[in-house]
Length: 405
Image (cartoon, rainbow, N blue to C red; front, side):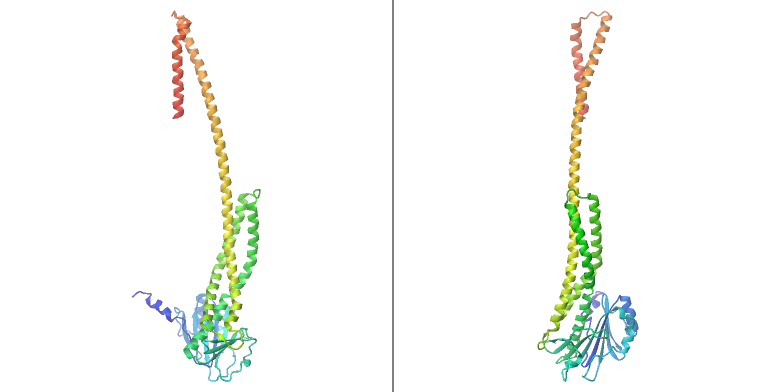
């Protein structure tokens, strides 16, 4: 059997729900933190039954069911406190859990309290909702109410009225509601960063426009200085992209989970009230779209800076080719001048050689005349002319052979 078969197969049973019957209070807390922080917190809450390798677990805290889940960048606690009375209202977090989370309150990203009860003798007004939203969920087998306002204790309150759900369906339905709120908050983490980034992107855009105008101006600044400014802008954009890519990607992933869980609720209207899903989508989608638009704006800016750099390099390359062409033309002109000078020198050299050769022949004729050889000038000319011509021809041929080599 493959060593990963069991662990991969057990992923089907990961993230189980808590199953219980109403009435009950459900407290859900989500904390930002690394795996080490999560382990430290869980060892304090439930040291007896903790498996540090597990992604989730269900234990008991002060006699109540407590479920913990470990996620990539946060961890959650869900405590279910059942009751014998159906007349439930909002209550404070049990002291047993409140004391343990006191140190970790600065990292609390989400806190939800759900009152789970039956439909009999329901008075919605006593729960203090302001402009509440309501939905029939699960095909009308339950009703959920909330105004999505944070109470004085920092919790978001939801009222879950069970009509025909058994413990299993009720546990899964409440789990969807808790995941919607937690993933919505995690997806919204990038909103502040996107707003701060927008001001920085405005500065980048203005810088890019200035650099583009300098690049388009044929009489503009030196290419070396312009290339340095473009490289500096590109480095800043790349650094910003690297810092924000993870957060924006996480927003997309969490937002997709929120919309999927909303679809799984199978909502329908309760009277004239606005549905929970409609309320969340109308106010949550702009956040997601704003973050997506900011991410795309950053990507387009990076592409524009890269294109500007390519254009500058192309322009510099063309200028270098023109300079090289001018240099080659100058070299060709110099070579032609050198060839003409060389030819002129060769002609002068032949004239000089001819002069000296004739002088030598004349000296030879004078020497013969002194030795008593009877030669008339005409005879001497006829005898020395072929010799002089032969020597000149041999010298010319030798020069050409050296040049060809």
